[in-house]
Amino acid sequence: MLFKQSRHRLAHGFTLIELMVTLTILAVLATVAMPLSQIAATRQREEELRRALWQIRSGIDAYKQAADEGQVKKNIDDNGYPPNLSVLTAGVKDAKDPNGKMIYFLRRLPRDPFCDCPSSSDEKTWGLRSYTSPPDAPQEGRDVFDVYSLSSGIGMNGTAYKKW
Image 1 (tube, rainbow, N blue to C red):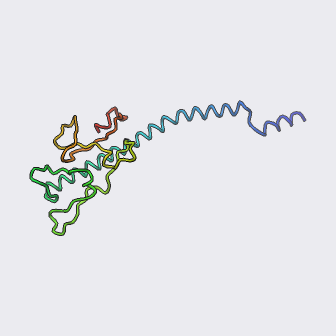
Image 2: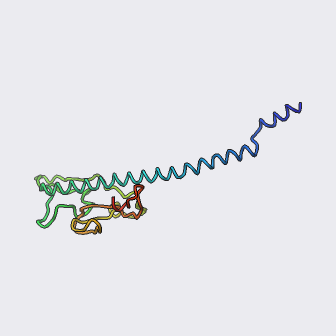
Image 3: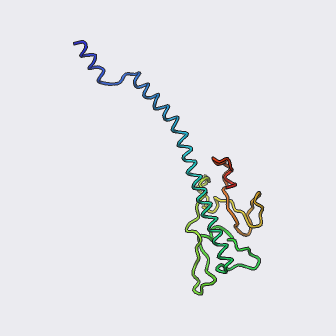
């Protein structure tokens, strides 16, 4: 009868040692998983940055090509690059179309994923480089030749996000 009572008591719950071992195992697993999830989140943001830079640069190149082909009106002293980023989404009138059809280069302007500035517009999250500025010291000017991230962070590949 004593044997039945002790067996019955064990079936009702866990001992304190069993609970402590379980919690220790869960804590170890959580400390291993946390850095991995942070790395995955950083990789995702870096991929978003690559994609956004590619989209904007493709839009800038398409605008330049349209300007060189005479679809976008430009002055004789203009180089054909867009005056700002918003013109890529707002569109321009096709100079070759008598009906004034609009040409759009981007559906929407992507936001810099590394910018922690929710009050800034999408265009203000990017650094702008004009055609006349040197590549090692980009500055804004009359046109937009290139864009770069304003983040001061370093990528997982060891290159600063500004230089991507």
